[in-house]
Image (cartoon, rainbow, N blue to C red; front, side, top):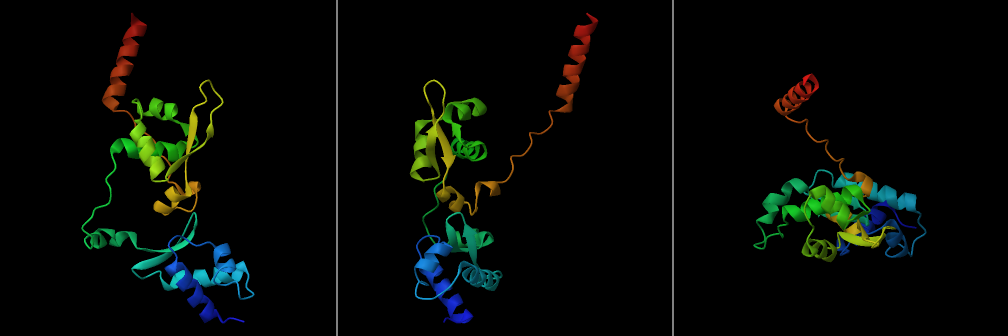
Length: 194
């Protein structure tokens, strides 16, 4: 038998020492395999740990591939000063492409190009795949059978999301400028009177 305190310590240590996010099954079949435990009890220990860390500079968060410790997002700018190397900067085109894949998945390169109005470079698609943020999930049943792209668990983990449903909704486009709308109405009314 293991006490609640020992269980919390083992779960905390296992998640802290892991290189990647850890699932309940990995905990149950790994570090906790020598104990007779069930998922609800492990989940309870994780919930307690999350509460313990809620006000600290490090948080225990659940992402698509399990649980991990990470620094609070609001501390990022200050922590970035600790390391001279900078995070890679991504172009607007790459971020637009990634956003469209995330919101419209699965989608083809042609559909992305139709929305953006410009072609998507091979380098952008290669970079997204090398980062393991997108992958080919099939081919569309149309002539040429273009590849269908979708996001991955690595994408969800990077952006601290648990599922695709957690991706923020796409903002509605702003209303067109009222002067433009008024001008269109005037031109249309003039056409009707002619």
